[in-house]
Length: 158
Image (tube, rainbow, N blue to C red; front, side):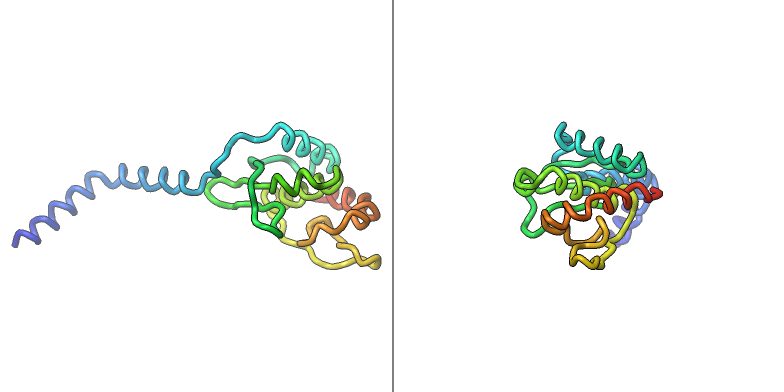
């Protein structure tokens, strides 16, 4: 009988406090899915501004972007959780050329800000045909296809 009374008491307590419990669970969920570092790098913000200009405003920074220590071969990733954010591998970013940095950030913004999936396929020159290709391509591919990639960014509607 004592167990039954305890269950009834617990049920009454839950009914009285369910709003508080739901708020607590929501806050917990948001905190679990929040990136560790919300300090956005000025360097990354400048690259995002360049991408916004290159795309004629079609790619806008709607998400937080941070440096992180990602596991090879991942260079950047978009987290679509309670709070969307992007992480870019710091070591890889420091190694890349200016155009490859722009392309990587534009690619991740394509995922996070525009909701795009990968668009795979290769052009006649053997290079990725789209800036949303899962592989960024080497420096010669980026140099040869740069104008195409920028045109694709301008054609987005997100």
